Amino acid sequence: MTIKEELRKKFGSAVRLNEPLASHTSWQVGGPADYYIAPRSVNELAEVIKVSKQFELPLFVMGNGTNLLVLDGGIRGLVVHIGAAFSYIKQEKYGVTVGAGTAMTALARETVEKRLSGVEFAAGIPGTLGGAVIMNAGAFGNYIGEKIQTVRLVSDSGANLELSREELSFGYRCSNLSGKGVIFEIDLLLKGGNPHESLRLIEGFIAERRRRHPEQPSAGSVFRNFPDVPAGKIIEQAGLKGIKVGGAEVSKKHANFIVNTGEATAADIMTLMEKVRQVVKEKYALELQPEVKIVGEES
Ligand SMILES: Cc1cc2nc3c(=O)[nH]c(=O)nc-3n(C[C@H](O)[C@H](O)[C@H](O)COP(=O)(O)OP(=O)(O)OC[C@H]3O[C@@H](n4cnc5c(N)ncnc54)[C@H](O)[C@@H]3O)c2cc1C
Image (tube, rainbow, N blue to C red; front, side, top):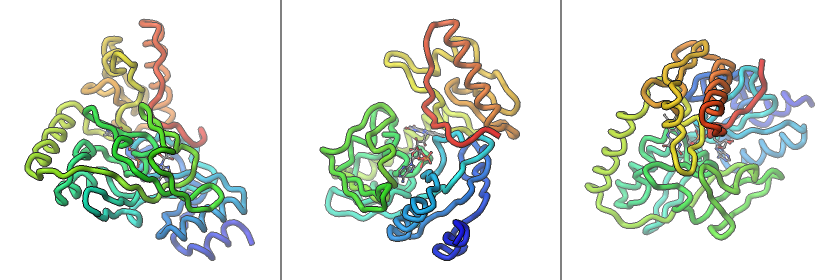
């Protein structure tokens, strides 16, 4: 049986062929995935992983695609999307068990409804919790890694694994979970909260984002901050706000955002990133490192 036949037999119409990834990334760029599937259960996820192994198909996991630059040639192999089927929050006293496909914004609001506090900062982060765990996403001095008790994932060999806090490590926008498998569930430890105070915090965070961030399609911060200075400050000082390559522009509002003004390609964004890197290197002898993950093939 061919790969296509095997995938169709096992997952039916849930498998899409040549799926354009521009419609699954916040930058709205990126070529097609050979195969794209959103598994509906942990068992189905394990099956997907097994089939990818059987046919030696490379496998790439996507949440909401809000930290990704998918190149214009797309992704060869199988893209697994962890989304709506893995979106749930179950409470047990101060602990919550959360599906990896849960939107960070929903996590912030729904935990407040449960009179819990600790992830208000997640409001306004457009990714899923799974992507946030990999990236140790954070904002306003908080990081998701601080709240994590347990991570459940399906490993590359298709086995269910449970990793406890002691086995996990988190750094600035990174964790030791990259490449370990597909995360499907996370336990977070929060504390009791006052919903009014939490909602006030959330509204403050959202207002601050509206004030600082551009509205056009982006992937958030493009480059990692330096230990002592934000990357955006350096890029702004270098006079790069507003420079363009094709449809990609260094945001006039926040210099560490590159926005898609409508017709950008991934190649435009890559070229603009390189230009920014070069100017910052020449002017300040500083090496900017991408925070976004660059994946796929050039066209
Ligand atoms: C407007 C805007 C504002 C942003 N603000 C912030 C911010 O304040 N703070 C911040 O930290 N980030 C921010 N981001 C970046 C982004 O939202 C976060 O990094 C987010 O957590 C990524 O989640 P995602 O689901 O989109 O992951 P994706 O972009 O889909 O993937 C990111 C990485 O995680 C991996 N991955 C995703 N899901 C899983 C899974 N279930 N199992 C295993 N691996 C997985 C992917 O393979 C990839 O390597 C912002 C982005 C935008 C567009």
